[in-house]
Length: 209
Image (cartoon, rainbow, N blue to C red; front, side, top):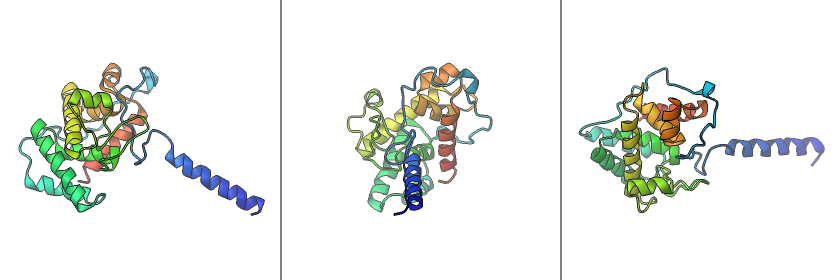
């Protein structure tokens, strides 16, 4: 291999590894870090949503069509048997805690790609990429169990939505809190530009379901 070919191959390898870097786990999702470092971004860079997410945070009775929409979306990424189990768990737990199931679906797609066995380098586990501390506070005993992880994810989202119910957009602040940690978001009354990209990803996914 001559020098030019070697240089091209080297640059290609660098590009591949660069695309895999950053705040991602092995499924290509963000790692939810409930202990985002205090003061990790300057106060002048705090992001506050300017455009409402147009997402209803909570729901009453979940209609059959909603389940079908969620199932069809998950089927794009998972085999039928697993997709059905995930969709059923999302709807069941969302109904129990009164959280919009499409919001939960979009969150799980962003976090784990609906892989119930996903494990990040930070120790976040399962569909909602729950940290051990979050599992403990939400009563999750097996984070790799589809229904148990869905319960923890929905319960945590319910907590975040309630915490930020008086904010300019509860959904976007709750999603930011899922990544940065609620105390950090509340302290800054906003979140970092990096987190803004994460939040917008989930909002965009929501509108595709």
